[in-house]
Amino acid sequence: MKRLLVATLLAGAGLAFLSCAVQAQDKKWTEVRIVTEGGFVPWNYTKPDGTLAGFEVDLAMNLCSRMHVKCTIAAQSFDSMIPALNAGKFDAIVDDLAITPKREEVISFSVPYAALCETFGTMKDSDIAKQLSSDDQIIPVSDAAVSGKALESMKRVLKDKTIGTLSSGTSVDFINAYFSGTSQIRQYKTPEARDLDLLSGRLDAIVGSKDALLGTAAKAGGNIAIAGTCFQGGVLGKGSGVGLRKADTELKAMFDKAIREAQADGTIKKLSEATFHMDVTPRQ
Image 1 (tube, rainbow, N blue to C red):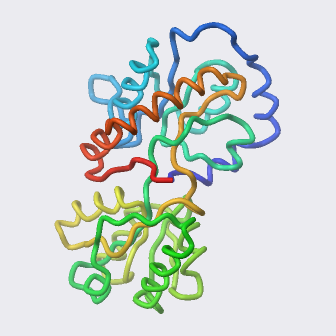
Image 2: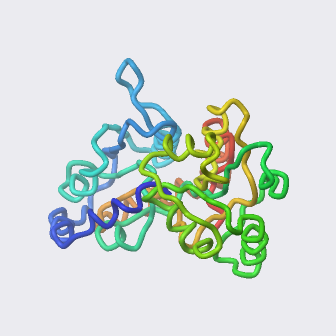
């Protein structure tokens, strides 16, 4: 999911030292201090009146209710969240934080509460759109038999095509892992530059998370279509989880239980469909 690149910048030895600064707490949790970015629409954002809103804010409050704890949510820059967590300034990070091996060296995670999938966008009247119609199927990359067949089918359609991807994050990892040598790949620093090249004909397709591409298609006035199967897991990560200090095992157990309940009763599905127009409930 988002910002896997930042994980490598935050997982140094200095953070490992900070993780030891806060000791295990035997107290009963009655209040949890949550931090989010407050600027990552629609996951979390700050409204004109200064209050926080978004999918993760709504979900966090729902989870806190299930855990029977009082929660406060504050905004802070993404880059400083993990150091602040390990220093004891906050108790939990809820900010589309992808669960990666590098981050797991430094902090603990709840079970994932969201997992997006990667797919393609192309011009609505293109040959690619005609051959790769959009569907609601999500295939886990870890299921080699199923994903291999789907990937080979897409490779045939995208052979020698020029595909645009962001230069950091899960999209570039996915495209390099499965389409390098099949398609021509161009990397972009911003989605705006990538999307402009698609609209101007300099790209045949773009790759990204389905929720982001749905937003791109909406901005393009219906000229961009989602094309092909959506892939999840594997090189794309386990999903997004609540970031926690390694010492706070009781709090992790509380979040895990609440997330599983929210998944089982359809709360995550309901909140995500209202926000992203798709279900981001993890399927792994």
